[in-house]
Image: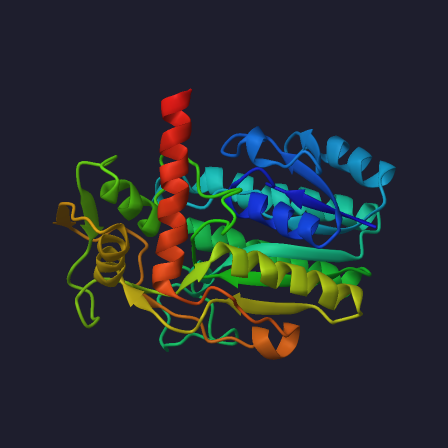
Length: 329
């Protein structure tokens, strides 16, 4: 059987494709290339350029190929952008996911893995935050993802479809073999932005908020290596194929680092210094978001890169590769 990866030309999606191919899976990629890159999709995968919300296109793809699972990454992910453009996020993340689910039901796809987010928790009242706490997203991004989780829950009750929704914490790093990484020019991921500052590609690094109720006043986040994250998806696929019931699981390491911790790590690994400017808080940023999770016991998932300096090192290596690529082009 084959796996359809939506958004497979993007940051996490391209790593998922690599993980599936390395495991011997047959892979189809659907991406409209609005933020992804055609070169990020390996030649071994079958690439289809198109939008996940194109019902007719997705139906043809699923009917004509022996696909038994969808891993759904396609969507918009920038919290401040979602605050400024809520309707755009509800269209891209919620309405198009509804269309994809409808085609999955129509074509009798049995397994569905969804790229959700810890933003569904909003400002959590406990830390670490577990999957059973109250869901109170504070951004349209978080709300748009929660709506899709609800659609999955209700669809799985009405149809023979089982799913795993994985709530990501802060995804960072790059493929250890240097095959892919975060390549979006204006990405807002802290470790990427700090790596760019360390390499002189940014004049300074901006820290948003220094008055949070945390040890150093900056936000605390649970940073997970992208390769460990896609490994969790592969475990979820195996779990569903073996008859596992539908699940919603956090994806994080269960420990947090502050913004200033990350900046120190980047300076240490890069062996350089760069200017840092303190700014006001951004809308939609909770003070702390750290994963409490059942993923180890449910999926048997075991991370391989649970180390901040390793995550930073892989990110820096990818940024250097991108810089060399741009210089040569």
